[in-house]
Length: 259
Image (cartoon, rainbow, N blue to C red; front, top):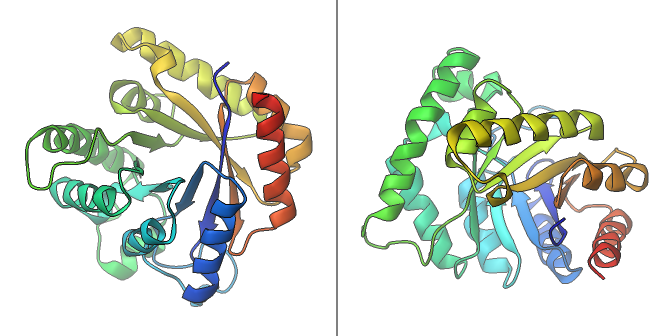
């Protein structure tokens, strides 16, 4: 079992920018390894037309507000930006952050975003095909000497649990995988990812296993279960500001596990 990491995903909704910025800095000060937002245009819960900030411009601010934690969008919707643009955005934010970016990406799912902003929603299959076509383009452009090239290889995270396509794409292209619970579900998906790694000739140990934990979830009862299921990176999904007692509990649990 590798060294444990913990992170927090601060939801960029129902909040002012100043409050969000304070939550980012307070979370880093409490010792998390990673800080994430998400890539939507409208709140996912609560009042649907309340404050909401765009993911990648906000990620630039997160880069400037922090000095140590890795940062990323959990996860970028592939449909909203073409892969060439997204690669240049990622390279830029990687420079701004001093090389701390993780490029989280997925196929997209929130139809309201698509409809209101004029993107074609298509089907789950068509969105996954688009993601499968985009990932090699992103990786190729990252490897080229386009100004500015990234400071170093930017890790790619794929989020999702689709066993036939998403986890195969993860085995082919990703450095990190993000899945969801409960622990028994996570364990099954993790085994499927291992099988895809064997099929495509990838060392399963080369993909970091991350799990998103909803802020309502019984963390005390599940953290050990996720660890037994193969997770090594635990991300608390939370409104901003988070429940700092829960965040402190997560950080303390990590420190005990790594002692």
